[in-house]
Image (cartoon, rainbow, N blue to C red; front, top):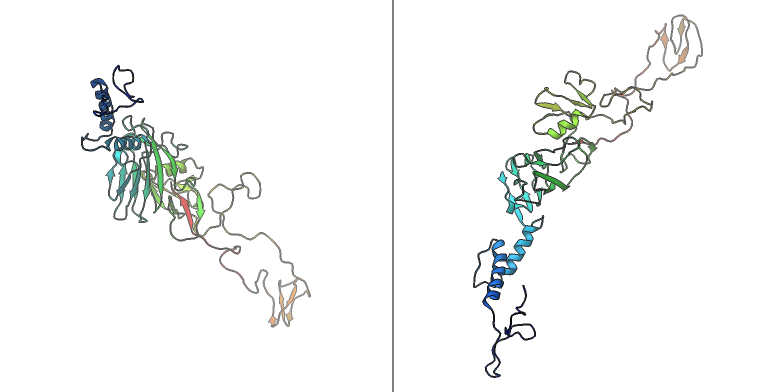
Length: 354
């Protein structure tokens, strides 16, 4: 749109409209109806497309409409939505969604990722630190494209765990939400040490061999199935560091690591041959010999001596008397505890669940 410069006799001065000047006797500019209607209709189209109701008394509607359109056209809206109960998000809710699940478990459902929605972004952030389950659910057959190395189509939902956990999603307008950022991208199934007994946000559980639901943790179950560390409950004894198939239908079991030292799998090096991943190795000392010094041989009574055999003996001098013979293998004293271990510090173990 521009001034009607090509209209004959419109009376523009320096390319712009001017008022009539009766004193100077100069006429004002003429505004053709076609041009005036066109300008007005163009402005009204912008106002209407922003969802505003045109008003003759409001001269700021065009700017307001432009701001609204730009906000909606950007993948990331500047809106903030607070949620404290299960909710189906609308297109207008997309932006920053703050979710509080302190009172109960919550499911927040995303709008359909279809052509009407187009390409839109949303950041979903948990603000409470309660243990209630918080699920972010895709609409219908839509999928959220995370852990696609396990399931190419992604999964229909994910969970936010702990205060501060957040995911940034982008819809593609074709049935999918794509993660473009998240609070903690530590790989799924990884064991980690913590310097706190509390659970850090981002998707962590205890490394305690817990029984889990396949329906609630489908990505973790898929990870377990391809891990090469899967056992049945019946064959799990001695392989508690791996996964188990649980009841065979609805559950599975995670690795148990409490009280254990972790060791890198040999994988053909030959230092610790024949080990399977996740299999427990009981404590053991390296084989060795203690060589005594023989000071006398024979059988009989000795003052301050112990005889190791009844015929051929080696004598060890101690500050007490022993009369007779001592059977082979007799110990003089014991030292140590229930296991062989190095000097160590104990940290809580955690497992990345999502």
